[in-house]
Length: 615
Image 1 (cartoon, rainbow, N blue to C red):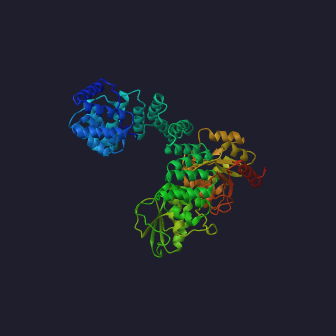
Image 2: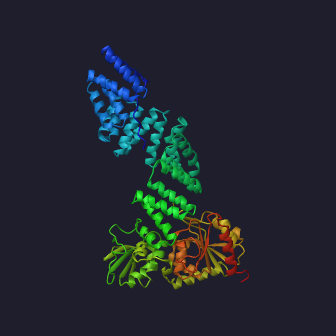
Image 3: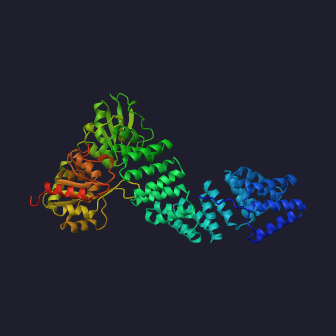
């Protein structure tokens, strides 16, 4: 939150200011001519920004008259302008012993605020407002202090009062908008940032704040001009360069992002989050070694930076650098409880006869993926209890190497682990020794029911389809293939298309049907019925999909899929060829330069070979 800055001496504006100036003039007039002349000269230097000269003359005046309130007050202003807020507060407090004026009280509050003495600053602001209730800047300063003291309700009242008293003051609207962002009222905040910019287009901070807020709201194209304007006005604003780099990444312009992040680092060397996002830009461009180097530099600057740690882990794993990748991955924030056993590979005890409680980690797909490591715990002699996430427990209860699969409770255990830590703890280090998916047999009665439903949908072969997965928002793992493009590969096939897309958009399935010129059958509800989905996936002749939970479920039925992998790839799919985690699964990759064309051409050829027309 931007605090209102210390006001320098200004020509009197309001009636009260004029009265205060007249009073100061009378006080000066009551002085000896020599002292009055000295103070006038000091004030002239001060107003011209010649602080050293002004400070020397104020000091000379105080040696002649130690109780001169104006000399004490103005010396305090200089101390605050120099960043010595504690000295400023002392000098202005001394001035108040010899005189009083609204400016004294207001600037004392600012000095106490700057010194971090918030309770005293609050009292001083309140006293200043008793003397001058309509001073907008005092309302703004008090609001900022109240916010830091946790008194949000009163802070909001004073931010709004400051803006109401000074409707043409850009700073007041900018500060109110900052408060509204803090409160989550983003739409209203945008209105006040726009008002601030309309009043003062040169207010770099408002331009930056609006740009950053728009970007946070997923409106990066709108954010770009405001961030560029902010940089033009304040070329050394490192955060603006960094945020503009993020906008370039959002807009899929990583080359531009690199330049902006590098400029931000010149202004703020070693800034961990900028180094982290620089790594992300390198990754978008396929410069994976440079990405790892940037993440490493971020961690050297800030060893506890979780985002950089996870990004380096996933990049290393994508390059099949398993030893370092799993070591980094273990230091993510898992979903296991805080009292989970903290182990390294070197401190993993002999598991023979031990009762090991393993906790789920992240989503269904991760549970299925990491479960392939749990049989090793059993082989090492452990009794293994797995606490699953809800609907996964019945499926895992059929796994022979688990002594129990539960979805709640805290059974007694000797060791408590997150399932995502198992690759590191068990020493997975190379692709050749990568365990395959566990086998989960579907329930026979569900298989029979789904077989009948497929028969009613149309003739063999049955091809499942998922074109979108992940969280569809910035900075999240999002995997999407254009529906029109994937439909073009299915249209020539004599096959019944089964839609498995989770949460299809309104009209998407009808559009797919139109594109392939025959009905696409909606089986999407089975995404919330894991037993039904498992049975269905065991029956499909093929499954074309971006990587999602259903790919893991199909692997658990010992069936392969055809997986479309966006660039940069998710770590399970690596950079080229097939994946050691899903042997036999065909992988079609988006190119960093070529896009989806070669991948979809290869997919079409593969499908036509597997399902020639008329068979």
